[in-house]
Amino acid sequence: MKIKNLKMKNLLTGLTMVLSLSFLLAACGNDPTPNPQPAATAVTTGTGAGSSPAQGAKLGKKITFIIYADASVEFFVPVVNGAKEAAQQFGLDLDIQYAGSDPVKQNNLIETAVANKIDGIAVSISDDNAFDKSVCAARDKGIPVVAFNVDDSKGAAGGNCRMAFMGQNFEETGYLIGKRMIKDHALKSGDLVFTPVEAPEAVYAVQRYAGVKKALDEIGAKSELVGTGFNLADVQTKEAQYFIGHPDVKAVIALGSAPLTVAVKATQEAKLNIPIGGFDLTKDIITGIKDGKITATVDQQPYSQGYYAVAQLAMYLKYGLYPSDMNTGGLGLVDKTNVQTVEKLVGTIR
Image 1 (cartoon, rainbow, N blue to C red):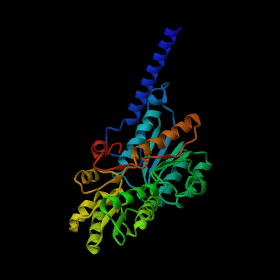
Image 2: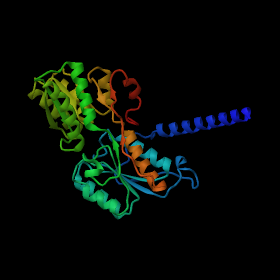
Image 3: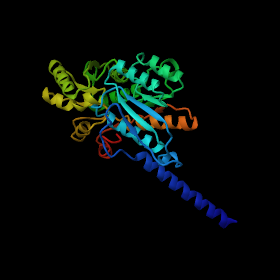
Image 4: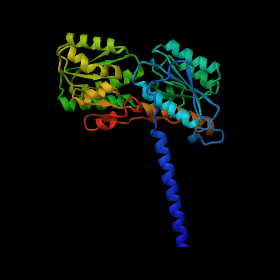
């Protein structure tokens, strides 16, 4: 009896290890092509009738995946890679669309998806009011909708009709990077900190700034929020002009990937040598950290946002499992202590 039980125990242990390895390989895979799918192009993935979802079983379901920015924004490459990976694993037809930071266009994309009787929608909700009507209309038609990357600041309870959100708590992480910059660079009362961001009215910008400002207010430091847009050349020019006009600025805490990506070049253009920190990851940001020009950045793990948004829609459509909110990235910072680990993943899953 003891031998029999031992054999059964060994068998179960072996099966557990195999299943765990299979899941890790699936979750860590990334798209071999780092470029996002162009707008209005359907990505049909998954073959093999009768196979399991993890093997790409064809579910016969179509998902529209809507990004509020345009395809040139580097941050969203890993978001798209994650979404495509999940679509492949669950056998979904994935249509990736870009709204170009235009709320009217984004609402049109949502309404078109509803009119086409799409099976599910994943969407960034970058404004507290602009997309309430269209998202609720989709839900009224029985179409599941999840948010990723940016959510209504009031969530589902008092804000948008979306079912769940895959993204980061921006106010918590804003406070985190604010405290780190204060600690590392001895910022003090009266110091001016520049906080540039692509779209200052967007939910992510408002919440990140609230967190950073909370940290700065605790020591009596001043801050100034300035909108930069998403075009990197324009962002660099606006930042350099700000520095030239404010030579007393003591630090930069960029609230988005675009202003942080060019912050080092902008300070050099203005002949300033000040500490820099902020949000998100690009190759230029990684270089800045390695060179000691950027202190730290918040990693919100965009690959996870894209992957889990699609995966949760798939599980709802197949099994009726209601999507759950997910705080991606937690309270992690990327700095010189861990940049080597992160570097190889930037542009694919980070």
